[in-house]
Image (tube, rainbow, N blue to C red):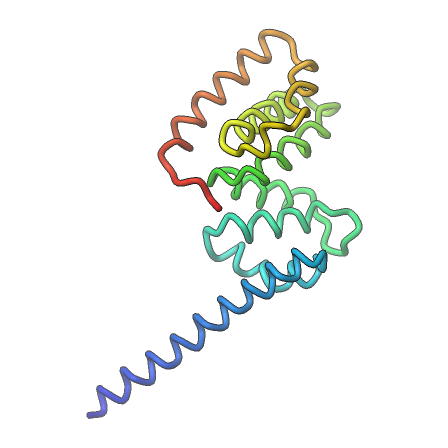
Amino acid sequence: MKLLRYLILIGIISSISITAQVSDFQRGLEAFNAHKYEKAFTNLEKYARDSNDCISQYIVGYCYADTSLSMTNDSLADYFLLQASEQKYGRAMGMLAVRYFEKQSYDKYWTIMAYVWAELAAFYDPIQSVNSRRKFIKESLDESEIQKGNEIIAEKKKILNQIETCM
């Protein structure tokens, strides 16, 4: 009898914990859609860190990238956007491409990686395919850099084609 009570208690505690996480996630999405980014960040940061959820990772990366917010952090923005991009989340791929292109003055590597993520975003997300940034980024590369980018794209597609598109 004690064992049964113990199992019931564990079940109740577990369901309360899961409900709290889902409601935090939902509150974070609602806040993001309402352009209340600080609140969205507060609700989704732990979820983005502890889970493999591309949407919360994208939103947290977006918030870290927004220079008007108090939590601005370029490294963490790139980290979370990359995490979401590697799960085939097109919006994250597009934003990562823009962020990498902004770094082009530091190192041509970033321009190549901007090209890679812009092309992948267009390939996996129809909304991103109408984006003109791809052409602009590509025009800033020479033939050998485009070739290097295409090689990286081919390698990334081998991995990304094996996973479901994150929605």
